[in-house]
Length: 409
Image (cartoon, rainbow, N blue to C red; front, side, top):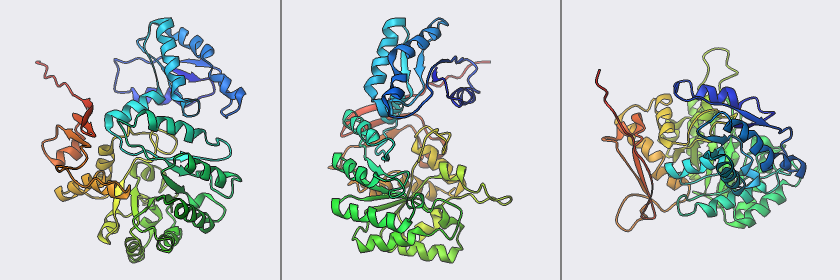
């Protein structure tokens, strides 16, 4: 593994990941990285020369694979990583990979259908958007990628973000993102997002009410603005965990207003369970949006991963069935009918939230589907059946096989 000299997470995290794999040993080599920014000086830290020098030290140990475990490709581009891997192979005769390239391979294997978010702010500018557009074009035959232009650090507390969002949408953004709790004025933030969506004809994707505080109710403004701007059915909200801390009657009344405005909800259990409830000294809340209550009131609910192995969600592999299993355990969805519902939440209900035409497998519809080795729908959710074959646009694009061996005593 190649790691930046200033990184303190990668080594212990990798050792934890390999706890149950004693046959695998991992070795590390560092090169100097002391600043992460978009300046020329900072980017020069990722030149091939120092990285190849560090790789050479690993080659001395006779390793089987050299991996650059960093994310610089997100702003320097995937071609930089491909060039580096080729240089390692040519110079040392050892295969090489990078975490960014491996992530794209995982998207292909798991048939990830939609991907967000593209963060824009005055620090990174439009670098994320430029990189994401490259990915979208490169993998268009394998993955349908949707780019949400997302102001992670707020719109008005970061001067220049509003103009950057407009530029990113002009470049090819597919949806207008918003995060009202990260700005100086939540309502002003939402009004601006809805005006931009109305002007551009794009849908809205919001992260909202992400806390255990029942008084955080931006969702009421969102319901009103959705109707005001005529965006019923084109607004998706994620997290919405404050709703889970409200009294049931109050939460149910808000859910009814959401259903009337045709607002979709994406629950993010891997993140929400990990981050919420930490302020509770006893009887800690799970910190989830009330999935069952929302569905009973007619709200379309699906689920997602939010992040994968970062500070907000330090685990996961991007498999929707893992999230289905987690949600089943933590929202008491343990019946066969619940298994059917969970599968819908990552297929047809998710397609509805993303405004996709897909509704079912039938003659004449798009041949985008996954064939699994599960014998039953409950087995599919509970076992997260690894054997899968993926078709996109009628073309077989990926396959995962599993070899099982029964060893005699």
